[in-house]
Amino acid sequence: MHFLVLSGVIICAMFVVYLVLILPVWMVISCVRAEEHSKAGKTAWCVFMALLWTPAAILYALSGSPRVGYRAIGAISGVSLLCLIAIFTLAAKRTLGYASVQANGFAGFMSENEVPGISDEQQRWVISALSELADEIDEPASLLSIRTTRLKFIDAALVTMLVRNVSDGQMSQQEYGDWANTFVIRDSFKAKLTK
Image (tube, rainbow, N blue to C red; front, top):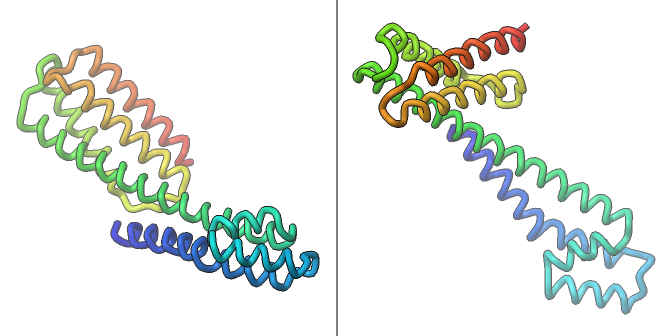
């Protein structure tokens, strides 16, 4: 987890460095070297970029030489995409980590307390299912694996569904049946995905 946080911070810091330092310097150099601008135009753009730095550099990238603009926008898009991937990965890890803690905590709660509305056998099955969900959520896997990530989020949704069903301290037979059916459907979905 710490590696992911560090990776996200580094990638976002690289984006900030790119926008604040690299892009403006690149655009000033590009402006000075541009053959299509007059000396007055080059001077005006350079003064404008010196005063407004990053916003002026982005504006120049969009309105200056198309060749330079495409490269700059491509680089901004690439770095932005890396930042979004880092943020998504951090959010997904955090969400799944919370679901795992919630599943383990709720399994412990149900082991120590009787849940009105369902039989002892049903309660033991729910505890077992919760433990299975927590183990599968905790199982190390790359978040880049779409199948694994989908299954982990389905598991997290099942944990959330159960916690909501039992939030009033009891579970009706209807809530138990709905949750048990969803768990079984999840098993068949998992079997199809792992083929």
